[in-house]
Length: 318
Image (tube, rainbow, N blue to C red; front, side, top):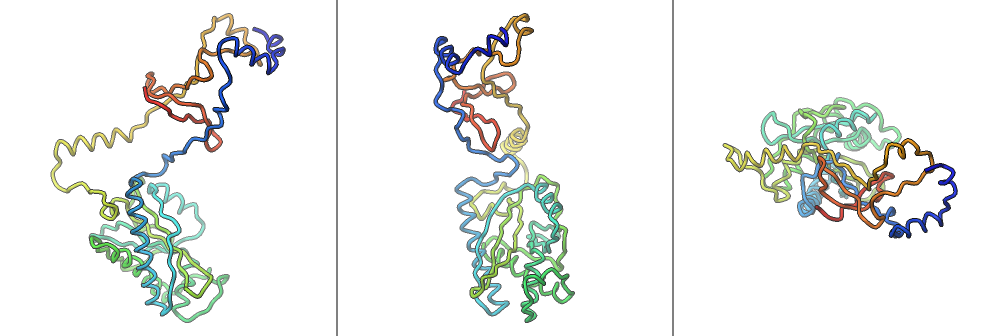
């Protein structure tokens, strides 16, 4: 093998060479778009349960609209902008990276054990509290620090949002905390907890301006809403122990290698390799790649791309 020989191989000659060994170009297999699975986000609920959660959040939005209507004696439109799941450490990192310092009010289902918070950005807090005071201050002036009176009014608004959540399901009896804090999530989190973040878009019916508020709640507190059966409290059975062990095993990291093909060379051939040399692998181009786990082939699939990276679309298991 030499670079002189390789440089004489045109594209047509390469195609002829592939045909000669019994292969033909695959039909643009590299352009397959793989569906991306985000491992950095929890997947606490299945698709059916997510639909139940969507219906529930719409009910909460209606309840929040009624609470604001009672406060301001005006009709309000409240919609759900997004409902996402995240791990606590990711959420805390986002908050620390964010320059604005939100206001937080925790709520709990058991005394001194908060399970969620109402989060209100500074701009929303300023606009809502000053409107309660009859101040028609512009959006540009809403970055001022709240007075003690305004913080007291914001506590009432945040408590109303927590009550709207509690009133939207018969199993809930959430109690808001007595004080509101700024810039720090008042939850004891280890980092691995799964949280659900519900974002509300709130505006007066006769206004074009809208503002946001968020509900952050532990995913396991939404299990009754989506029809997911919570594990019974009390002693553990052998079956419960098995499930717990399996759950821990499922969190273990496993190294997966995607192998396209291979070739065996003599030491002399390997030492003579030069840039632009062509190596014919031991697999036809219309054969799938292999996914290897701990030295064993578990799956087959086709090379693809996703989010600017190489990927493999799994087609079958071994």
